[in-house]
Length: 317
Image (cartoon, rainbow, N blue to C red; front, side):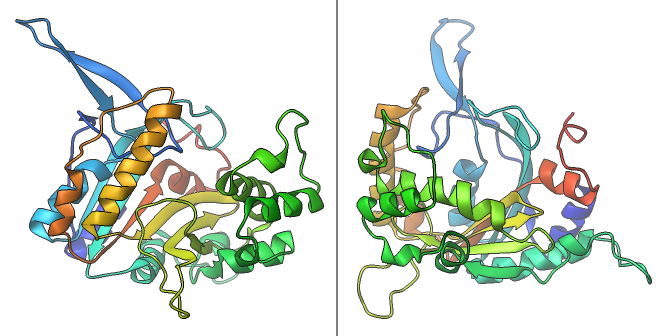
């Protein structure tokens, strides 16, 4: 962790230390949070607070104000997480945001970080070859064709994805047939069961350009035909079969941010085990937000990989 700090400080990044508690969070329907409360000593009035699943909610307003590249090492908290080989409800996250950069710039920066952290190879062997850059770059469309047998771009409806899931022999519950599943759930099912397990494990893999049908705060990949964009400027890094980090070219359009908060907030309110407060004015930070790319990396997993371990158990406090 000292070496991580050294890497970013040498490159002029400002280290942040933002709060673990927040009165509001960014709505993300894919995760659950921890809720607590502050009790005023005089009035005994209780104010809801939430443990942050990511420091992003605090970091982005600082970038909007100061327009500087930043990084942070912090504890993060996600509820309803399994406790297992690479999962824990409390974990350490490295987040770094680079102004005037996109997701491809962050890919190159992340390769530099790995080279900085890894020892040089020995003359006769390299025990860290599976971690060493350059990373293999593979688009989501290419990955689905290579490992699931079809182009994701050719399946724009839930019915088409349901048919592909059946062809792949994925178990279909009798009481929850694929025909009733939304597109993003079917996509996630095939990704997790068929694509991710087959990604190369002898080389770090950047799985790039995620489908635009899955909501996230990333920029669109421009569609050369002028039609609706199919992909987001997003990648995830897989190392030895472990999902290690998630990177965006950050969305900067205030109206798109406001729309995302409204739509995801409604989903969160209906489906979340633990609904949370949402700042309805958060989008205003993006009226002055610079071009920027951010990456979130699981440090416990990174340290385990650097140690040649297959579990984070020995890394956690």
